[in-house]
Length: 384
Image (cartoon, rainbow, N blue to C red; front, side, top):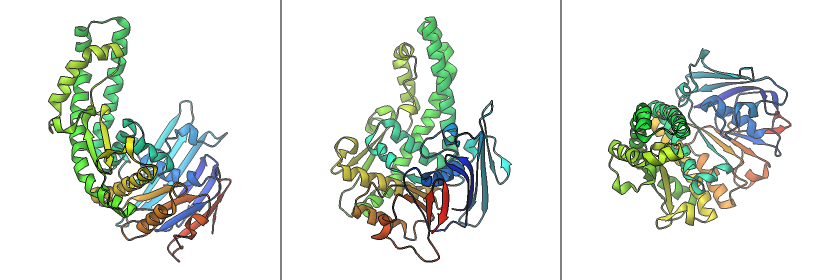
């Protein structure tokens, strides 16, 4: 997959930006902080994944003083099949967002996810290896949602059920309803949470085994060392060694055991939304607690490259790689290894942002007729 052209209207400081003829190799955007270079690749994320990799909402993406924005991007699959994605947002009232693929308006945003695989790496992603369980669940969800529409469907239905169930729990607590009465009201949503969670847990458990070889290989390539990382899936935080692949009985027991506490706290305490993914390195020491700064960086880069390779294997389509200001975070050795790896035949189109051209001077020379470099200044793009 690669992006050929993009047209941006009223996104952050890009009031009207059009870039045609992106390179199928490296596309490098150079500019000072705040110039708008991240916004360019951010819009690619919106066009492919329906949301920014920064987590910015539509009102935040909207240019100051504008009432609507538009992102119009054209892609070509590995088999040269054209894909035209258009995302429109208007503040309203009411606020309205629409997504069209090849001029057909999509019923929901989830129908786009997975059609244009993308892997993004930013300095903020360091929380994947060092942050809370929620960050690693988000990583799992991003990878598996792009790889499987069924997984995405289950996750969307789980979120919906959790929203309704938590609302009911809060209502029951406020009205002082007994556990017996609350159980009856919650039962339909409890069943949905159990059903969808069991399916998500099964898929996540399988994913760990599928993903591990990619991670081990990529870590070795990035580090050049002998360390071997590992990862463990912990459904609802439990050690995987006590869990069988049939997660439904475990979920049913947990809901029964925790029903009094759930009513007291007015929130759902069992389900796939409580899962943990543990990362280990250096003789099975948990990365979050014991990894050095350098090991964290190596592990994060390896996870993203493994995500790239996993998605290619799962979808049969080469993902687009977005690297936002990552070279400012890497030392010379890791930066050089990363550039060497992604310039190889295994990786396709790559978008890179950096504050200075010098970042690449030691490790990278533009390949004539293949790579492109752009200068970004105050929301304007100039090809160099």
